[in-house]
Image (cartoon, rainbow, N blue to C red; front, side):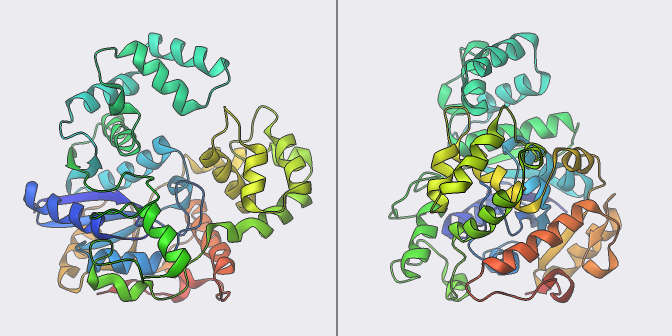
Length: 394
């Protein structure tokens, strides 16, 4: 059986995602598609617009056969950590043949060259990276500048566009894991990654989230959201800025040493965070007061999320060495045989019941994230849903 793996946030699942699943099956003649999906919080450090079970159900209705949850610790890291976690889990399933991802480039040769360079980390690249970082720019900007020096013959757009960046990190993770999984791309169509306006076809997730928050489904057609999943988006979405009071409480309750201990807080950022928390009147104002040339908005949002979760540097180091697992969120009814195959072949636990999986700091963080997410919904939800919600059979 030829199985494809796809890693995504599905925030929310839309027509472009359905297109990727369909094209993956057609172009690479796969028998099944396993999706590795972020849970309640995504890579930008924001709360997902709908809960993980709703988004998993949408993915199944949109063509996926199984949806697994990418643990919070990896789902909320930079592209490198995100890709490392996803690839490591898919590799450990021992049945995934290809890893499909969307790119702006139809040819993977340039992306593979960059990924190999980053995987090898030659001295020239490390030196250039240090030089640019010492100049006070953000890590993504420093890396792009370093790559321009080390790979002068490669088009810059290959390592500057968001989807290509993730594609590079997927391939790099495959190389470092010595994985047998083959990278496979599907060329993106429609609106660009962060485009705010709806497109005639395949609007970006950013534009669709904006519409759902502003007015629901009224301006979104089947070209934006597949008809099969539209009813899932009738409920009130979670608004990313709803975290603001909780962040303020945490920051105003912590002293400088406690903030300094949080994962990814460095170089005096703790002082800016504390000072901003004393006066900020909104989520946007808080981020704006801290954002700088070195610290991007996304980096700040992730840091604020780590503060709410009390994810310290020490805890993060421990989590990096914790055993992985495959948490099942949803399965297509006619592909329950595939779930049995995962359980038979995987070298990591395949989890269908939270109550049967214990003593995992990684999994404990997923549960904590669900409990935080429950507070952000328009109608506050009960805690511990991970233990009461069965995996979905659709």
